[in-house]
Image (tube, rainbow, N blue to C red; front, side, top):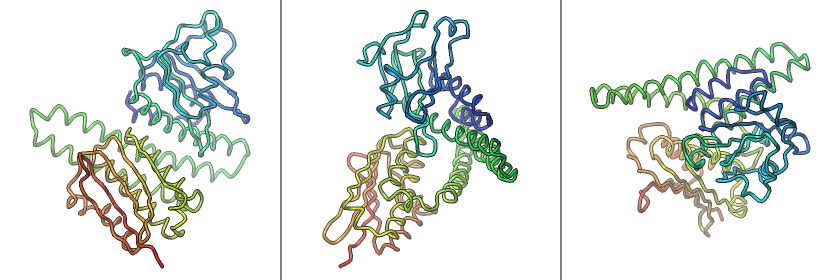
Length: 371
């Protein structure tokens, strides 16, 4: 099952208990693991629920009590970051397994985030067909966990509305938005995926037709991106006001990593942020958003670096990538570069785009400092 198909499957489930089981089940197929589980955290950070997959009921009854968050699972809860292990028993927090428990060696765990808080953890063990879980597996698991977080939030809100007996109109509106996302954005992405799969078979037989189909798929993805952006702007219009510039950039960075499976590093010192007023910060976050979107579309980058530095006469926002670069004029014909240049002008500054050695592209937003 592809990541897109997995997202569609999760989006269609609104019962929270059933959804958690589907997350555990589907994660094994998406990542390629023999066993999977979802651990739900309680109010005090303890492991309140544990939903497993890959172990039948007969064996589960023989094993007995479910994990409560000690050992390796407890370490993952406390550290709040992904964890990959070649051998679970080598971890200093490993307690071993109870009688009748199947042997498990390789391990991958990632957080599931809902409403900017850690809802729980996704656990995967016994990588199929390979010796260890890889960094790519980790990034894929983070992407799947992000989809799971959205689905959990949707299911939890519907459950909350029903339990409180609130206005039916609220529930209907929530269902409408969910249906729009499922039937619109997600279906469009799935359609593009099928079109690209078909294009692969045509590359040798009919390259001209394959090129046309690929270009059409790219155009459709641009439409999807615009649709998703509209949801983001409507749902989070005051991202910087609510979280501050540094936190807003970090959130963009996480979204970029999840959506592109690329790495990203951010260095935003507090003293640099202090030099930018609220209006300037709003323009800066939009510039970075557009630059990251262009990198995701055109650069094929595996690593991105974002930094804000201050100088006596100016503030410089740097975004660099290690991708293949792109034709500036081709991007200029779209809206992305126009929006970046417009934001820079509102700041009284300039945007410079140039090749970076040995490969990649460097974006420099130069903002003059007032007296």
